[in-house]
Amino acid sequence: MPPIVAQGRRDAMITACSLCHYPNGKGRPENAAVSGLPFSYIVQTLTDFKSDARKSADPRKTNTNRMVSFAKAMTDDEIKAAATYFATMQWTPWIRVVETDSVPKTRIAGGLFVAIEGADAGREAIGQRIIEVPENGEATETLRNPRSGFVAYAPKGSVAKGEALASRGQCALCHGTNLEGLGPVPGIAGRSPSYMVRQLYDMQHGQRSGIWSELMKRVVGPLTADDMLNVAAYVASRGPR
Image (cartoon, rainbow, N blue to C red; front, side, top):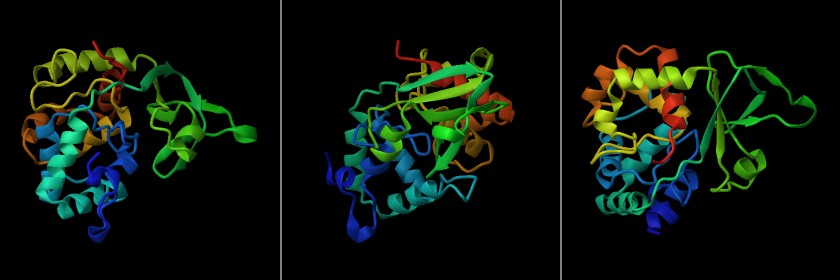
């Protein structure tokens, strides 16, 4: 494991990549799953952060702001080392999508939704939301177990609606037939729907202006919030083929 991934660099206040994205690159809903992404895409992403071509439409998204800071302080060699490390890993989905009318009540813990347990536990209507929570709250929140996955609750019918939207938007042309990536274009199948919606929203609002962004803007421009929810639910439900 490269030092930048394992330890970061204290003199530049760069946190280890593995702290947020995990040593296996699977990440969590509040950041990104980076394992299995193309080397060139990871390099370009960090370069975009470095040049301010990529940021969050919501200034409260503190970990995006931290990524900008880290990227600006990283050397070219560190960027290449991190990209090589994560790109050589095979992506294996660890999110299951469940369509439902109701979801567990949740609390927010460091950008992560965690199901409430004990006397205050219960359920509430899902509405037009995706609620993505750890399969095991203690394993993820307290123990930071990089093998304990997530469940994404989505409104009933959202996966089918998302599939229809993805077909009309011709997502497979760039992301591959099974949405597992094509050349320098990243795979999106089986990845966090929470992360996916944030990226679609940022692209729609002009906060991502790196390579390929213009092509994506034409696709995401007309999408409503419900459209984004449905597309994300569908994409997250796609497993390896």
